[in-house]
Image 1 (tube, helix red, strand yellow):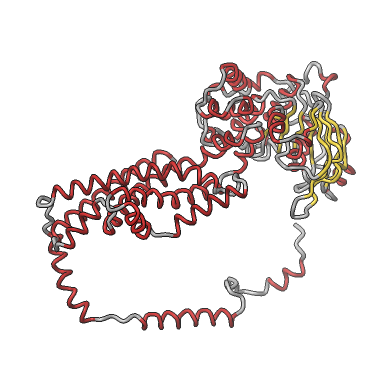
Image 2 (tube, rainbow over the protein chains, first blue to last red; image 1 turned 30 degrees about the horizontal axis):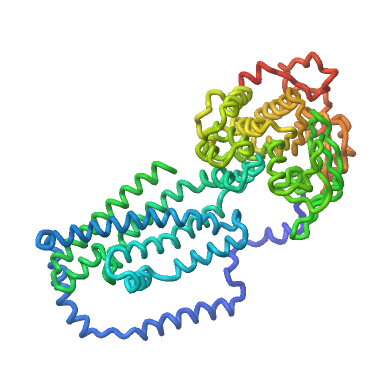
Length: 274
Length: 287
């Protein structure tokens, strides 16, 4: 209504407009662009590729691909079945235990509801769990508890905590505060605020993340088997070591089928909750 | 009776939201709190149940000094203070019934509330309240399936489920259309009259406040600059609260109720003043 007329008259004569650049100072801007490009070129130049080695490896690659064309499920079926069973057991138990532990840690790691000391403790646990890749933890647990699925179970449980607790904590920090405030205003206790004001808001995401983690844990279970933590990974490793690419191919196909099945199943469940 | 004495709130950022606010709300009195955005209306009502911690001053409800209470005692005191929110603040994914029953949380232990095993009298009270606000048909619907007006009715039922001695109402109509706004205001005022319940209603629609409440407090920059009857709101007062503007279209003669020609003047008009617009049939027909 009351826009000053004089500023408008000067601006009105302009006919071009450009979006302000992200980095205002043009010199700094071009220095950053140029520097990044230079680094990229040097980085690529520093990779030394031995083409003769690549050529030698091609042969083995071809045998591998050929093995895939004729996957052999039968000759090692006993080992495969046992590995699968171990992997699935490991996956399900580790996911359940991981969820049970990550829910309290996730609640404690949410800044908007947890007191400072609890928040810091929970965030430290999350950071610890997230800072190590599954394989490193698996090597540690295999060294501590010996070869086999128990080390795998511990590894996956531990990794689940970092993943789930962090995402749950962040989801709790993102809730609509008004709903929690309304519950608090009724005279509800802290746990009641969590159960009524927060849980309904984060539940769909918690379920979705748990299913996703089940997926990840199954895939990881086949990887950590390679370092001795049991499951289908161990069977796969053995098959590779024996150059039985046809059996290895059968195992990989089974893993792919199970992962796709889990993916499909969890997407259906996630759609139904919202 | 609610008494505020010298209530002051300074936020950690240094913003002074309230400065020496003092007033008393008598039993059964419905007070409209008006003022520009940022005047401290929301802060004021949140300082009463200490969702916002006041910096200094006293709040006394009945003979309890709320400002001096420890955590447990504060929770028990909050049970007696019902609160109704802007944007309803319902728990969207819970059913209407769960939202109403959440008003009883202060009276029920954690596990009972967790497994939704509320005492029978709480459940029957909740049914009664849903009936009173005209939502009997929507008990098992999820809160996010309702319309704005219906949601605010659930909010009202939740506040009443607490058996409150005081209602704090924060912009109840800010996200509703004009007709629904009037219905909601009418419902709140009517229920307060039925129960002799005092209430403080934050509202920025001056005309709406004028036609439904009997006392208006004007807040500007955290200070009370007006406290009086709705018909005392004139050009000069509104300028004092909001600043210079042409107020001729905002101020309405109090008995000039042309918006609702079907309304008949309530028979006991002289005892309650213009705010009393009992209209049972229309209430019952609302959905």
